[in-house]
Length: 214
Ligand code: G3P
Image (cartoon, rainbow, N blue to C red; front, side, top):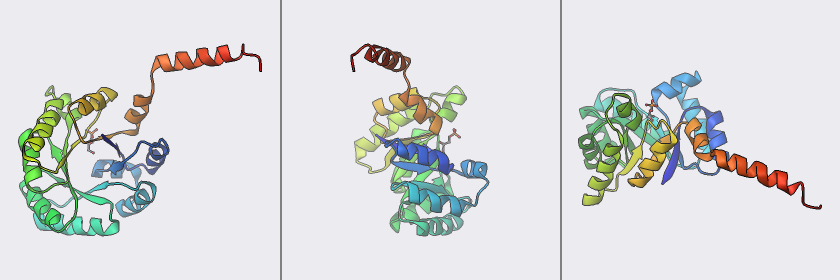
């Protein structure tokens, strides 16, 4: 399973990269807005930190505008993946960009039918937002499981990217149903590491070690 970090904060990206488990980065307009920086500057810095897929989202609503923005984003670096929302225009833009060799991450996916369309349009990644579904009392994880099954049934190369992750169990559950990728906030990466018995066990080992003649 690939781990992406869902942030535009380069400080967090550097820390996650140093942990040695990071395969890529996803950003969205809300995350970029939090940085107070120009999008292009943020992207140019991220590509120097992580040598893996970096999702950068378009903001145009029409297909021609999405394609134009997508081409410009892709020119920034070979690792840029153009993030496109699941709309009719988004499908058209995904088909066009994928057809010209530009990788696309279709975002704002909330159903298996939307995910199937993303694969048919040639998206490299499809991003179901499981946390936002859970937030409205609608289980998100079945969408991940359904898409893993559907893509497997037909041999679609599109990867299921579990997004809108809220906690470590989302990662474990997504891994159990075979999600290819999970993108998560830095806080969740940290939470994955910690276990109280690890802390207690380490304290005991170090206390006992003091009794060993040196
Ligand atoms: O970046 C897409 C997605 O992961 C957003 O998550 O936490 O805003 O629902 P969230």
